[in-house]
Amino acid sequence: MHRLTAMTATAAALVAALHTTAPSERAWRKQGDFNNAYLCQTAGAAGVFSGQWDDWKCDDNNTLWVDK
Image 1 (cartoon, rainbow, N blue to C red):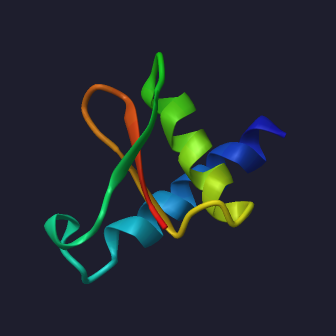
Image 2 (image 1 turned 180 degrees about the horizontal axis):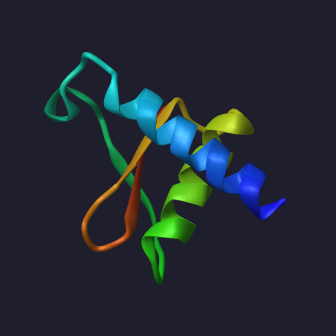
């Protein structure tokens, strides 16, 4: 199960990195703060998978930002 979650998070991160729209052009909103990058990325990918948001990113402080 952990391997599947890690693979999903990695795939979602790669897809997010390939978007052509610059982050400054989007309406990013803060979704939450996490203790580490793994939890932040997992929450971001899970939100996309469940349809809660369209895109996500984690900053250097492990804060999850989402775009609907």
